[in-house]
Length: 356
Length: 112
Ligand code: SF4
Ligand code: SF4
Image (cartoon, rainbow over all chains, first blue to last red):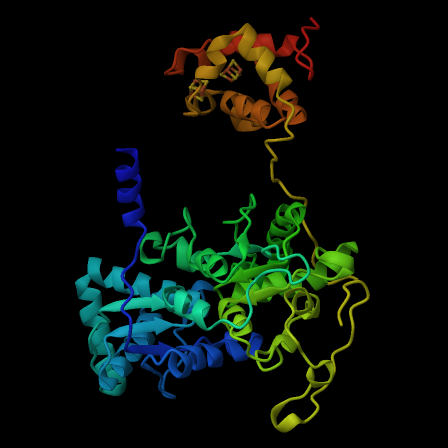
């Protein structure tokens, strides 16, 4: 009886994720922060796993950041989103996958708003037609890219070159995950596991050999919070949130953080530098930080893709101690080589946080 | 380095490290304290609350979170009028509870 009850509760947290034929939209900020993640999502899903993932150069921002920063009204964001749906419809797709958590939340919020206020949907359809002569069907399924990687985690594990275990001891790596708020908290039933049972990232980490650590502030905001960061007077609030998370995970000595949102890895990565400069404190071993990885970067690592091709030189926290721990080879001389093996600039070093 | 903003002190409560001796002593002496459901009726009716922040609900929560200084600050603003006792849906004698608390030090010892 108890088992059946649990199964029923768990069923509410499941999500149907079609296996193939997706229309992919990128994130505006991820391409600057962690530029290889989206590319390798496509390489892994399309080239390695043979799925049909379509993207068009005509898609734009979803306007989510401007909406959450209170700089545009929701109707404007809705019209921008309606245009993305029109592109999907024109390309002949019904399943919509977004790279960004904020976009995912934005699309879900807009579809829910239209469901409750059909007259608003009619108005947006009219606005879109007036603006660019386009029409659209609403997507049948909306997924975040991490949903797909979660679905394919078994296939990735079968092809994996490395497992998330410490080479020297054979112990699984200690992984803390941070679930994006716009994925898990706005519409919990639209993400796998919601915020109560966040399993989309932990499912990947466990499938690839790691051990997930449940730390007290696991579900706390990463600190981005849009208005908290973008308005400088509020920025201390953003930093304090991230600081709280680090203080909470520190006693568990995590080897890495895995996230599924554009803002989360950025703040969990870059604020480690700011905290170290302000307080002199670092959270990793031997003066290093704790690497914060996107799920695509993690998938790429276990599949044996070169760390520098995955863009780890763009991280503030050095990845090398983690690579050494897993036993992934890398060429330090290639770290700051860009396209055509041309040397890109080497960044300055922080005073406290140790970087390679 | 000055970035133009700072880290605010965290308000996180580590329940494993909280000192609950004063709360436990209160529940021993006035067992009805444990029946509070945190509805806040007491705070809503409290005349002192508007200008002092006194709230029986917050006092009970503060004790369970080891916030002794905050609790004492609130207790010192109570006028012992007893309005909160009249509205408590759980029938807790909140006025008597406040008086009991004033007799306990932070270690839960009866000192008065
Ligand atoms: S007895 Fe104290 S707490 Fe209760 S209503 Fe009066 S002043 Fe407020
Ligand atoms: S009115 Fe009673 S039950 Fe409600 S918060 Fe106050 S003491 Fe607790």
